[in-house]
Structures are given as structure tokens and as C-alpha cells.
Image: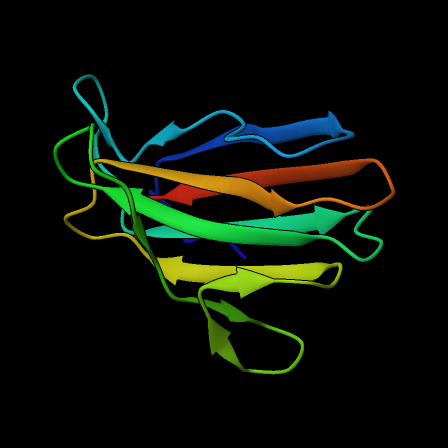
Length: 116
């Protein structure tokens, strides 16, 4: 549940993807809204595929980033199952869900960034 007074935005990071690729990076800092603190992600359509969670501070160099599967409470830098995931993105400029391994399925990753 979003806190009262919290600012949030919803973004699609991968839209019905059928192959490997970076997808759309989301800005965790927004000049008009300020910085976001938490990203919550829903992954759908994985079928033997791997999503690698990545973040950058400088907008050029991407690094693996740990995200927690809310169904299992396991933290990892990759996802291989549908589900809902979350991470603290305080201090991160951009975040993405890169499909690093693809074998089948139509993958969609939707994220919500919140300020609290």
C-alpha cells in the first residue's frame, strides 16, 4: 500500500519482450518530483529466461543490483520466475531489468517507484 503523501510513478521496463535486451531504464531521480526510494516490480511471462537487475549512478556504467523476491524473501541480482520484487534505490540514478537469457515466453516487467 502506498503511503499517504507519497509520490509515485509507474513505468514499463520490458513490454512483451521476446528476446534478450536492455529494455527501458527508469530514472530513480526526477527533477520535477525529487528522488525515489523504493522500486517494486512485477515480472510476468518468464519461461526459462533470466532477468538481470542493473543500476547506474553515472548513466553509462551498469552494475548488477540486488532485488528481493517478495514471495520468497530471497535477494538476488537475477530473476528466473514470475513474481513481485522490490529494492531500495536510494542514491541510484537509473535502474533497468535486462533480459540476459531468453528461451521462450513474452516477458513484461512493470515497476512502481515510490518516494517513501
